[in-house]
Amino acid sequence: LDSLPYPARELTPYQNYYSILTHRRPVTTMITSRGCPYSCIFCDRPHLGKKFRARSPENVVGEMEKCEEMGIKEILIYDDTFNLDKKRVLEICELKREKNLKIYWDARVRVDIFDREMAKAMREAGCERLHFGVEAGTEKILKVLKKGINLEQVKRAFRIAKEEGIGTLAYFMIGAPGEDRGDIIATIEFALSLDPD
Image 1: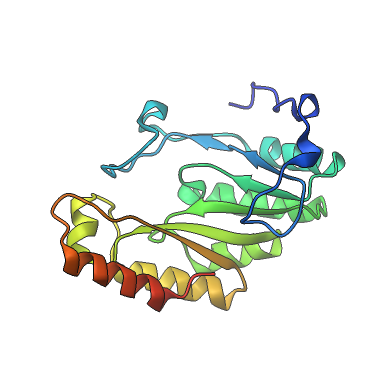
Image 2: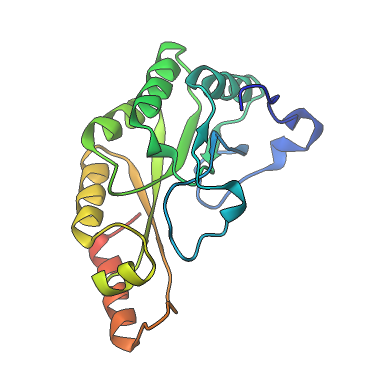
């Protein structure tokens, strides 16, 4: 993927871009990897394949640097699972800190492979918010969705993120196969108990 050029943002009115999820503008999006080995039944990107392919830390931080030079203040990383390769995440964070880049960013991460070391490194590298795909508030529906996580892992991830000073965003859905009113209410109650930002 490193052989692909950075997006030609200068050909767009990028100064006008913003997001209701961010605190600064302009904002841009970035994709640093493709593919996901998990089997969630609701996946909207099956065309990217099961094999994880990632850009190098140098390439990723190089694009962040170019964005900062253009006056962009924040980046929304749209990888399916940014934290799939912990070593790569830590290297991206270290390189960004070494270059003293001020640009802020957020990423979509899985709760079961998220830990405190990763949280600390991401926060120190300017990560402001994490998007967690929780999806459901019952073990029954998580199994139906083939999410591969459990509620304890969700609680632990949110606790770590909050303790390390990173904002949290949680994705939920209703209407899974076999889901009933009780499951939906349990999901709403679980979402409220997490207290995501």
